Amino acid sequence: MILVLALAAVLWGVGGAMGASGRVRWTMIALLYVVVVIEQFVLPDGHPLREATGQSPAFWLLLGGFGLLVALYFTGVGWLKARAQPVEAEPVAKPGSFAEGELERYARHIVLRELGGPGQKKLKQSRVLVIGAGGLGSPALLYLATAGVGTIGVIDGDTVDSSNLQRQILHREEDIGTPKVFSAVRAMKARNPFVEVKPYHRELTEEIARELIAEYDLVLDGTDNFDTRYLVNRAAVACGVPLVSGALSQWEGQISVFDPANGAPCYQCVFPQAPAPELAPSCAAAGVLGPLPGVLGTMMAVEAVKVLSGAGEPLRGRMLIYDALYAETRQFTLSPRPDCPICAG
Image (cartoon, rainbow, N blue to C red; front, top):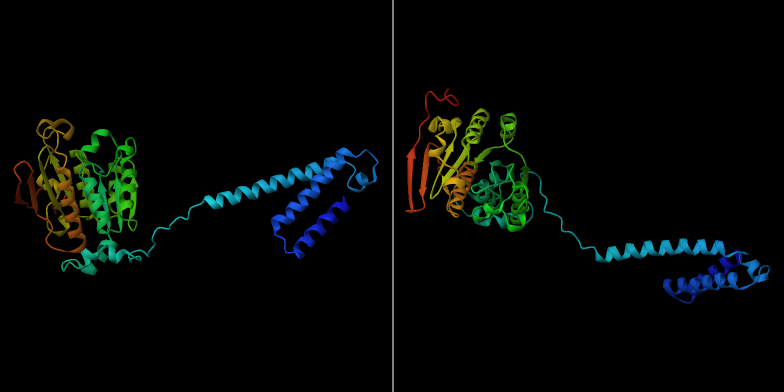
């Protein structure tokens, strides 16, 4: 055995001195190993050469098996390294500061006199919560992300259904069955990797509403039922957070900014109680024009940018009605209601 190891060392050293590559030297040692194993099987017991090389083939077979396992391991590691693709790290920036490439991304915002660099920085530092990732939430979320709002939360307990695809532009055919909030994250991050998106796959309830809304600077309500609208309004007023609310049915939609902290009425000032179900049927029952949520949801994103950046005049104390069928818009002035149980006083 010692003789074989000595011969292997000599072969390795001579090969190195002659400039042979590592592969050639390992091949020479492998040939030596094969010769030793063959002579262990061929030569009779007691033969001097067999005695000098270990007397039994068992040790050499075990050694060969171990060597084979080591060779297979390193070959596999090399194969995996060759197939591995470098992963580009997402751009990272300090909270509230711009990462490399962001200023160019928002260049069309920055040249706007009413927005500029300071306004864009306010957007970057802002936190917006969107209730619902459906018809209104879809365009609102996409435009908030592309506008550079730093942190966007989205809460929705629903999953994508084929009937959603007629108007909910966040989602794709392959997203059917996927929770809407996760489909939203994919779509938003695909358009702007610099934003932070927080998905909440659950329904908004009384137990969590105030605590959740208190974490954000602005709330957008894109839900389609009055119970949730009243809940969002109560929590937003309690937290002093402005609320951008949109609603639609068939060919018509409405939008307003409810902000009692800045002198505007709250949602319940304008709608003291929910209408009877037959007077305000759901989109599933009454139908809705596919592009209409895109118009109203985009308006909601516009109002959000104005509120967060301080640009222009948001729809505080005003409600805008859009009639798609006749291409008309109307505005109404809204006033706080002195006996409102939510925001009075």
